[in-house]
Amino acid sequence: MAPSADATTDRRGRIRVAVTGMGIKAPAGLTIDDYWTRLASGVSCGAPIRRWDASAMPVGIGCEVPEFDISTYVAPKEARRLDRVAQLGFAAAADALADAGELGADPARCAVVAGVGIGGLQTLEDQDQTLVAKGPLRVSPFTVPMMMANATPALVSLQFGWNGPNLAIATACAASTNAIGEAAALIRHGDADVVMGMGAEACMTPLAIAAFSRMTALSTRVDDPEHASRPFDVDRDGFVMGEGAGALLLERWDRAVARGAHIYAELVGYGRNADAFHITAPSPGGEGAAACMQLALDDAGLEPGAIGHINAHGTSTPLNDAAEAIAITKVFGGHSPVITSTKGVTGHMIGAAGAAEAVAAILAITRGEVPPTANLDQIDPAIALDVVHGEPRPLDPAPALSNSFGFGGHNASLVFVPTA
Amino acid sequence: MERTIALDAVRDVAVEVLSVEPGQVTEQARFKEDLEADSLDLVELVMGLEEKFDIQVPEDELDGVTTVGHAVDLVLAKVG
Image 1 (tube, rainbow over the protein chains, first blue to last red):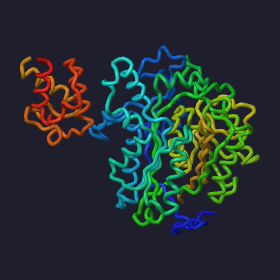
Image 2: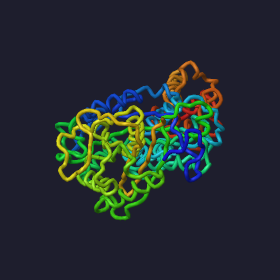
Image 3: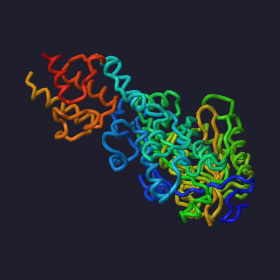
Image 4: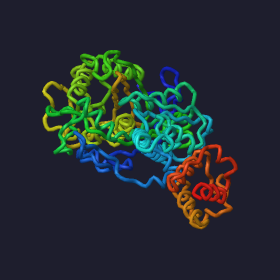
């Protein structure tokens, strides 16, 4: 299965990809350890929205990232010019970089690929209000650099001085899974030695909450927000808006080994495709998602039976969870890996979800336990999967799959193998 | 308007927009070199002054405004 520890290329002659740093800024925690503790507790972060008055909203609940001091990451003047999405994203990337230790890499060979579903939406909404109320001459000159979706990877390159490829990927809820996969591709193809594969989102704004609510995508369990996000549960009724950022520092395997880096895991597989079916609904029978998972397994050179754990997309919407369950059953047959959806705890971090869940999947296979799916009291009888609920489940070392499926029919899956 | 009042007001806006210390905002301070303001910062600074003094400053009147003292001159000329 896996090449020997000192091999520099995989079975297809591609450069191997090591995960040597991780960072998180999530509703469930601002550090890797706090994030893991909260995930393992199975207690959801769902609560009434606190950062603004959401009392007029049909759904005024969400999973917010706790307050943190951005001035420990960027100068106060710089912070004023950043939308919350870039603040969260940069902080997670900086944490991942610090976690990776001294890289000693050529800046021209260091890249950033960031998944951002929407971008600086709060800035857009604020400035639009200014435009209407005070006229065009009062619109901030920083509007465009704050709202553009690529502001986050741009900031990372500016702050780190990294001159390599710098890309933003906007595939909605699949954005940061795509970003990490494309980041790995840069290394595999020899285009970069170090890549920050990451995602960030901060669209818990009045417009986005109203809009997702009008789609009937959000849980309306507003009087009981802690129990609103309940992936795969028979009583699930929609997702709970989350926000945040996650980052993986990916590195050429040989240089990670040579510098004695701590290697959390190897990224061995990446699949991505499109449903080509409907702008928001999953393809019937989860066909697109199943094909995507199979692509990731093929890319990794693994049989379905080798996968020990799946961090599911599991948004807690009736349609998505049902389609994903069918898709998993299609690929894995009667053998269900140990599955969880960490969105029960974190809510749906949209473009940041995939990166946060990649972190969770890596922690699960390296720490040897799978966190429970929050609020999974009674599994939907139509879902024939082994979904962890209640307590964390011990897990023997095995490869893990992490899924993300986005509006637009974007599917993306990653496969990680724990380092022995 | 007295010059010291105008300077105080310009200082307030500069401190907020440029994240500098009040003591740095002297009449002689140069926006670019001393206060590290780039072109977008200056647009925001002028917007702040326009709001504070209820004045309009067209772009072409900003040519040559390179120091805090120049900005005070501009404000005094507009407010009268």
